[in-house]
Image (cartoon, rainbow, N blue to C red):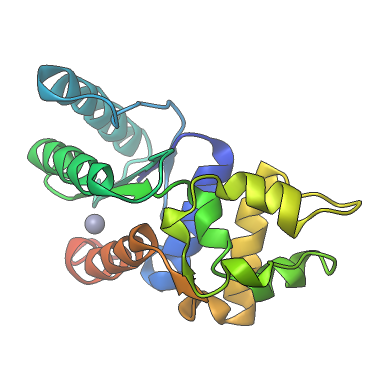
Length: 209
Ligand SMILES: [Zn+2]
């Protein structure tokens, strides 16, 4: 089960999860209702997580499927720092308490920061796109506005980057095989990969087919 802020984010996550875990192919169900968790804490957070869990369980029942695990995506909308660690820990704990198996995917600063790790895929999608050297081999989680970099500096020409391109860039990265060799780092990217591998090995067990 996959919950995320918008359709592009959910599609991006789906591409990455299926690439990391072929067992998830064709088995991921999306929840469309956004449930902001990032700024919630205490009773407010438990309440929202409870609502999210009810939606997920109802959806699984409708699909006549077992709810093996839930991935919840949000953008931090801020560069990597203490806030990332604290928020991720708080929400992850609340999700696990309610659902047992769950992964909180908090992107720093946003999914676009991940795209900057794959210059080859960006150029593969639109040949005029190129990532300026100063953004290569960097921690892209520390860039405060990766979306702007993509719009203004990578795709400055007739074909500019738009948010709906994000999943296609990731599809291209998987196609080219470069999604396993990011040019740079990003803690939230590494975390997502670890979560996908764990989920594949631990949470889907006994739930196959
Ligand atoms: Zn899992």
